[in-house]
Amino acid sequence: MSDSDEYQVEEPELAPDDPMRNFLPTSFGKRSKEANIATQIEQSRRQVEAPVASKKAAPGTDSDSDSDDDDTDDSEDEDKFPVSHELVLHTHDRAITTVALDPAGARLLSGSLDGTVKFHDFAAMTPTTLRAFKSVDPWEAKKSSNAPDSHPIQYIAFSPLSGSAFLCITAHPQAKIMSRDGDVLTEFVKGDMYLRDMNNTKGHVGEIATGAWHPTDQNICVTAGSDSTLRIWDVNNKRSQRDVIAFKSKVVGTAGRTRMTAVAWGAPAQGGNPVLVAAALDGSLVMYSGNGPFNRPTAEIRDAHKHDAWTGGVDISSDGRMVVTRGGDGLIKLWDTRKFKEPLVKVEHASTSDRFPMTNIKYAPNSSCIITGSASGHLHILNPGNLRPELITPVTPGAPLIVVDWHARLNQIVTGSTNSETHVLYNPTMSTRGALEVMTRAPKKRHVDDDPAFTMDQSAGISADSIITPGALQGTKRGGVTASGKSRDPRRPQVQQITPFMRSQPDEKHISENIPLSRMLHEDPREALLKYADIAKKDPKFTGAWKSTQPVTQYAEISDDEADGGPDKKKVKR
Image (cartoon, rainbow, N blue to C red; front, side, top):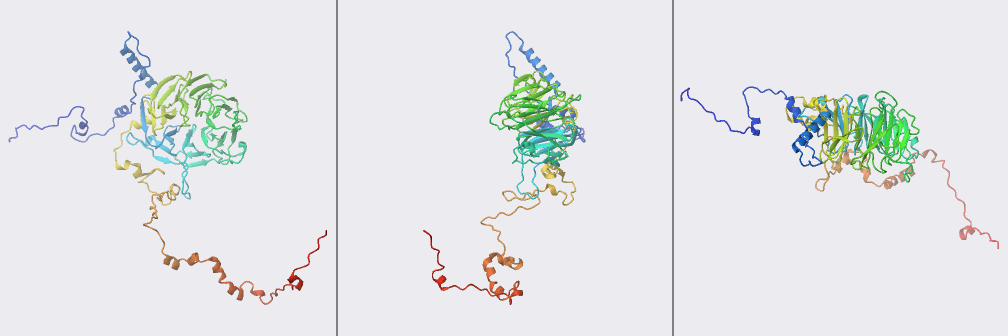
């Protein structure tokens, strides 16, 4: 065959849309691995189905033009609110009950019914490594305890003035102040449950439902408990609360007590007196002056919501004038603090507080709208004036949306649902940093080390490549064994189980020869003492000093009369 002959190379015939084309090279040489940012962001766009029209088109109208108008309106709504794209985090095992972002928007915390708080750092995540870098149980057992306590996370929140610490409230009478790294800074004291007057106790005696930070003081916070009190704390004094507000219910048959279900603490952005608003299980809504005194409420509404319906959502607008509440009676109501008697507007909205008391409602950062979730998994964005929905978009269809939050600096919405998913909604043109920054990074090449179970201690947030001083992690060890006999310390071998086929019986000969006084375990203590009775009598060790001088015991002589019948009895006078 000559060199001039032409060679024909057979190429595989693949369709243009065949997935196999992604694995075949298109050119020679090294391929660049630069991230296509536009493609990554487009892949995070939410696939939302167009809403079904509630009214049929009238005869003689152009239905195509109507559908085009609806699509245009939907796209305008998505551009108006940061909901066009999303970032989904799967880091919990059970329902998400609370979410929190620090003021800078760099760290995201999420709490769940599984009793853990997950720490997410946007600066360390990539599109392929969406995971929490640390997991903390606020009630992790001490080394001396074999049965650790675990309580569902009710509420977590950073102070609006500082991101160095956050308030952590669980289903327990004691709230905690924790650092942004998960260390417990302050654990408030528990009250005396045997005192009737709640003003005399130094802390809560019942489960705490929620809390809030002071809007202008980063060292003050408030907690609402089931003991019918609101307690104001100073984070620098854990021994006792600074102020206590004992709410007295007017409902017959409650003995003046009820459960406090929600609390909000707000202040006008332009400056002014802050306002403290709380809701109770008996349907009451009370308002106090934010700086005290707290002897009596500034205003009180007894029947704000239905009795025995859990009002889990309360929030105050940025100007401090409006208050919105979401009750367990299926109503959302809008109140004016200047005329705190009747609601301005009320609309029906299905409640989920009967199953998830942490359900909340929030104002937007500039109070331009109100956001809340629904039992169907939709996010409702409401008008702050008439409470009419401006946008209803599905986030987790079929799974109730429990908690929502809108961060002012990032301009992103964070949601938590019952399917253990945390969604971060954003818009590339409106939002900054946060989830948008994550999607602009190059995806990390997948490796076996990407599995955190192999490379990271989830409880301590330490990589496997780190050098750890022996004994430096004493606080992170779990002592004791589980019910099945397995050791809680991963470095300790499993304890052998005693079965009929394998009994761990000790060597009796070894014990008797090496352990002093081991034979006394099988000896009667009475017999062991009596065998020294004769020796003690012959040679007393402690009473030998007066052995020769001990007087002889003398007894009185008995007469014959006494020996026969005893002394004469006195005659009874008749």
